[in-house]
Length: 332
Ligand code: NAD
Ligand code: DAU
Image (cartoon, rainbow, N blue to C red):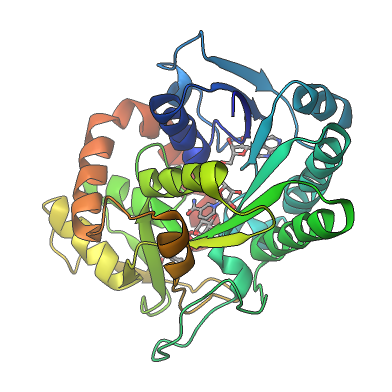
C-alpha cells in the first residue's frame, strides 16, 4: 500500500482515517472529495504536503475517477451522502453519490486492477427489537429502511457482484455509529454537544428509546487499516465497539459532561421510518484480524469529544445556525 486514494477524505470519518493512515503507515494519500456542505477543509490543513494531495471532484465523474485510480494501488471509498434526515427530504443526491459514484469507482478499479475497500454502514441490516438478544453479523439479511441506507445497501451489493463476476480485489466493512472530532453538527452527538454548550435544549426524536451502537472514529479508522493490511479479499467485516446506548441515555450523558441538567431536553417529532436499534457483533474482526477498540468506554470517548468541540467553536459555529434553521423548518 503506497499510493492510497481516499474518497470522501474531507468528511468526518474520511478525515480521521486520512490522519490515521498518515500516522500509522508510510503511504502517500490522495483525497478525492466533492466538498459538499458536509466537508471540511480545516480538518486537512495540518497534513504533511509531501504525503497528501487533495483533489476536488465528484466520485461519479468517470474521467477524473479513471485518471486517479490509474495512479494509485489502493482505493478506500467513503464519499457519500451520509445523513438519514436529509435523505428523507431529498433522496436524489444519495442515489447519485452512493450508487452511481460507487459504480463509477468499481468500473475504474476493474480496469486498473486496484485494491478496493468499501466503507459501509450497519444500517444496511435494518433494525432490531429493543428486547432482542440478537446483534448484526456478516450473515444478517439486508433490510434497509431509509433512502440513505437503501443506497448504501445497493452499493454493498454492487461491490459483491464486482468481486464475484469480475474478480476485483475488494473488501467491505459495515460500521456502527461513529463519534469524535470533525463530525458535522447535523448528527446527534455534535448537535447535542453544541446545543448544550450554547445553553439550549437538545432535541430528542420520538421517545428517545432508540438504541445506537457507538464507536470512536479512531477505532473505526484502525479497523479499516487492519482490513487493508490483513483482510481476506471478498470478505465483509462488521466494525463495532459494544457501545449500545439509548439516545436518551446518550443525550443525558452529554448534558452532564457539559455541566447542564440532564432533563433539559425537548422531545420532538420522530424521524419517519426511524430504526429502533442497531447492535454489532464484531467477533470476526476481533478474532481474525486481532482488532480491539481503544475507546471501549463510550462515556470516556464522549468526554474527549465534548472537550474537542469546546476547543473548536470557531469550526462549528458557522455551520450551527444553518443546520438549526433547516431542522426548525421541519419541526426537529
Ligand atoms: P460525511 O457526510 O461527514 O462526509 C462525506 C464526505 O463525502 C464529504 O466530505 C462530502 O463532501 C463527500 N462527498 C459527498 N458526495 C460526494 C461526491 N459525489 N463525490 C466526492 N465526494 C463526495 O460522512 P461520514 O460520516 O464521514 O461518512 C463517511 C462514510 O462512512 C460514508 O460512506 C458512510 O456511509 C460511512 N459510515 C459512516 C458512519 C458514521 O457514523 N458517520 C458509520 C458507518 C459508516
Ligand atoms: O449506524 C451508522 C450510521 O450512523 C451511519 O451510516 C450514518 O452515516 C450516520 O449518520 C449515523 O446514522 P444515524 O441516523 O443513526 O445518526 P444520527 O446522528 O442522525 O442520529 C442518531 C440517533 O439520534 C437516531 O436514532 C436519530 C436520533 N436523533 C438525531 C438527531 C440529529 C435525535 O434524537 N435527535 C437529533 O437531534
